[in-house]
Length: 459
Image (tube, helix red, strand yellow):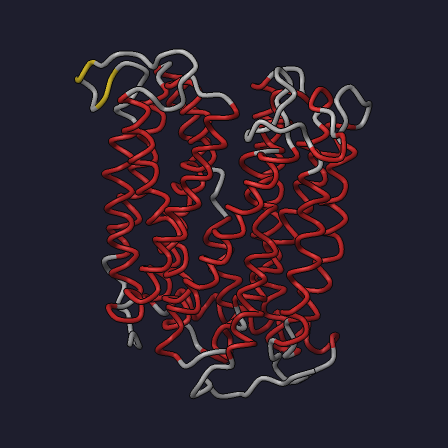
């Protein structure tokens, strides 16, 4: 096994960098296919009695996974820092993750345990891959010089976006067919005789994600350097917990890191709600179905990839904080534009003709919505990539895994709050736009706090 240097490298190993980034490539289908565009809509529309019930149950499973991550990621990170090994932890969490992905195939409509299988696999799978990602992120400082951290972070996110695009095209184009027509998004009959009537194409997204992960996570285990072994597990647990407590105290006493983590917590809540409700909002306000939402997802992954290609160099040149600030401002303006759109209206007051039947994205409101969504996709990736590169520049190198655990904690501990607030406001006003407007408040408050953070070490 390759051993990582204790000090930051003066040059990077291209093979190690590519292998590290392939972890994002390997893990992304779970978030794209399972969480957002394929299995989640199948769960709500087919597996449960009503879409409302499905949305509620999916939300509970998401909250359970978030709570587990919030409670354990910083602790596990501190233990990994004490033991000096990260890849063994990634391997340990990869095993149940792959099993969970495969289990989605068993979530058959009408089966006695289909709903329970789906919710358990989703909650446990989400927990495992999120924790594994914490350890993968913490290897960044050993791979490239400090002035190239931004490019490395954006490269990883870009690999994830490219993986999302390819796997979404494969699934929607060749595996998952419409129950009405029996055809896929590209007009083909599903491969392997998958039956659209029983959601076999949608359920196949689970095993497909498992195989994708097994193949493309392997280079990370083989070629990315790991830190030397430092302590046995028992003493490491005690030392890790003690170190975690010290990190929490340090984070509170270090105003710079504390304010950044607080800002990250708030605007990440808004980002969670934006992606959680984006498809629901488009369906309600524009009447979109699976084909439109799937096509919209493909557009967002393309613009997200392009945004990351620009975001990395901008991060290294101007710093991570300016990239995050710019992204939040754009999210607020585009979010305001999106809630101004419905089937016959744009920007709240401009009346337009409704979309003609049978034509994809033919109306002005749909085109405006897609344009604004494409811009949101372009800045969302750089926002998240620059958050982890900013943390690398703020956190002590010897406790990097711990602080990535705290970053995961800050991004998950209140992740229920923005979606809950959107739901409450929507219920009180009976208005989808009013409910979605709450997200803009989360972005605004996070932006105000971020402006107080001082960045050091940008190239």
